[in-house]
Length: 444
Ligand code: PA5
Image (tube, rainbow, N blue to C red; front, side):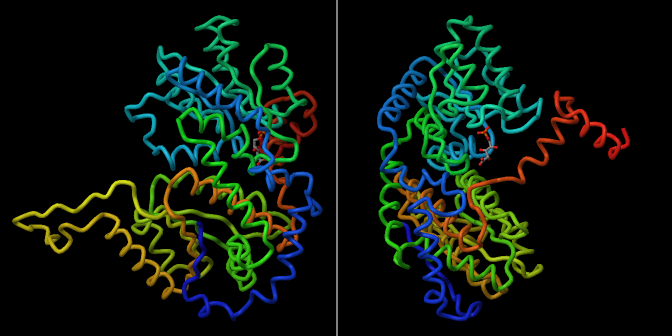
């Protein structure tokens, strides 16, 4: 099971702090369990690993099997919470090089997560003449980036297969009743999956939002949900036996003691998009009302040769949370070289994991010595079950953390500001006054 370890924390914080925080954590826990806190209407993810829609889950598996049988590629269109979780899980469990691998499952391309013409054209080129399907994901059904991308890929599908043929290759994951995407899907007869009302975007990876693209790659989504269900059980107990309590408490105490940045690190490059998912989860949930830790991420050991300098000796702003994913699936051993010209024979016969683990220990000691507290999150390995546990753990700890900070962990009012400006500058009807004011500021 997932476990939390603190390293030499007493040199950074007065101990014990748990007793003082326990009553506040208990209140936060009850708010999550009973949907009684700020944003309580968006706590559907709390019991999701038990209460998820089984009929829809079966349809997700059937759709994934159909896509596997009739498509060489799946284009996944979505942004933010409608994108990062699926990409995180796929890259972590199947590899960041998944599309380059020899396999009998479709390639997966993520688009609609930005506004780069070059990035979009590249995916169109990579698709070439291959048979493909599209999973367009938007809870609101109105987000500009995915909506624009969908226009391109829908047209591609309709040009290739005709309107009727395209119909059976478009899967829309959206609100059960509202939004432009839902209306379009109903009018066109596309298969739809639901982002439940009570689950916000960044907490939605274990709904159809994440599950359909993940299932297409062959990842066992029963195992993923099983891992999440185990962690849900653990988090159901309101005590420090729950790793989410331990994590929420330590990061809150570090924040109170003046830390303003949390760096999530992992020694597996396949974790990169899980870190992106984590950044959205914590950044959007906590960063409001002038409060919140700034979530950053690093990939070790690569970033020890770049950001490592700042972490060791720069402004003392941060603490690190290091995710340790257990033993690698492949155990490569360092070869012996008779001439030993590089002087590395002292490592001959050792595994890469052995070297990595010593790097991990050396870094832990160095960074702690340099004044950076370290929290370690350990999983047994890197299976779908482990990732299910990790996802639920981070979500639950995030909900607890938001309530400890006294913010609503389930809204994101700040995301609207850029959208309003962008709509005005694009000339969207209804934004005329703002357009003039903004253009004056830009001296257009
Ligand atoms: O967490 C969130 O709510 C956001 O990141 C959304 O997921 C993101 O803005 C995409 O929204 P939508 O799914 O409505 O297109």
